[in-house]
Image (cartoon, rainbow, N blue to C red):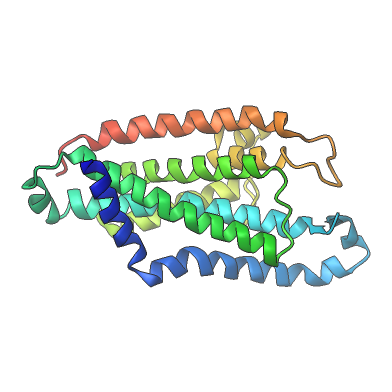
Length: 256
């Protein structure tokens, strides 16, 4: 029961800051809009018509998917900031005086960050579908990937917060990790040459994208199916569990 009380506390903190809500929803949608606008002239050309399939825009689909995954990997900054403020800053003396175990605060921070980030991720997905002609494909796979990526990111955020020097460090590290992985899989910025095995099976970002894309039959790959996504979902789930165990073990240390 105590754990759910702390969850309620962290959820209130997450939604009481309109700037953060806008940052996790309007900013990615703005980036998507800019990318879509750049591609409009190409899509109007005869060459671009091959990327229109059954009324869906496959270029927009790729843009929305990549931006959503990128921002969800950044979302662990929420759990990290909660952990840092409450268990590593001056607040820790106040919280240590309460009859609540540290584990309950960690549970609340992770769960609060997870729920908030999942809702914003779902909103990005909905906007992609209704406003940018995004092809969802297998929605179960997309939602499973969203669930695992957001949860993994919260765990990573806790690990980063244990060693970070301040809030800015947590935000910067989480953003840098997400951008770096996006570049390594060729999804954003300047592609970094990377072996296919590392991109598709080692980097969490690449595994997440692969799971989504192989579950979507398209004009260019009609033989993709749900069964193709299962190995990648299993790898992503294993990574999430591994980061979760690492976060809980590391966070059990008494905050300095």
